[in-house]
Amino acid sequence: MSTRKRRTIIGMLTVLCIVISMLTVLAYRISLQSPPNVIWAVFSGYYQYDPRHEMPPTDLFRDRPEPSLTYFLDATLKRCGGTYPQLSHTMVARYEVEQVEYFGRTDYHAFSHLHTRIYFADGTTARVIFRFEAGHNETYPLYLVDVSTIHAGSWMILGSLLRDPTTPPPGWSTYDRDPQPTACNPGAPYAIEQMP
Image (cartoon, rainbow, N blue to C red; front, side, top):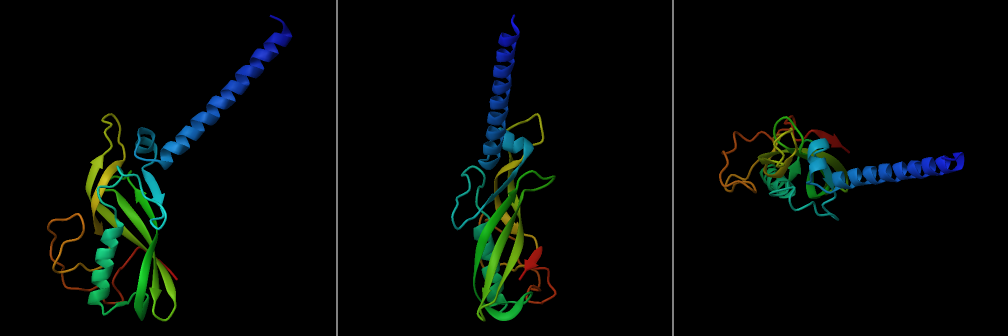
């Protein structure tokens, strides 16, 4: 085989390897951004979305965590006289979930972080990250390896937001009654992070 032919074959093989590598990386990235699928379940388990503009994949959640935040935070505001004592004694005008992070690959239950902007009546705002744990978890159907959770639901707040004493949270048919309400106390652990 001539040197020229050998160089042409080596060049073509190099280009082919580069194209295959690029396609593999692209497929990997796409699979991580569109769960649930095998690659996502084995290697990642992480997903994030902006609930104001995006819908999460239908098979990822049994029920989404945002209605649970509404349930717990509304009950807390009602029982604390419309205030969020951890941040301000000013009345809360409204709040909005800006981002949801889902962590499906854990040692225990799946959990979500809800990045929430709280707007106060005096015009100030604060960003709080509420952490919710899934009470309902199903494993992605791969039986040979440890994989991520799908169909997560029945979200429980990790912190001391209060419950509505008359109705259970979304995804629950029954729920233990609240202990003595302490969330209106400014020293109560509302959330995992607070950023003005």
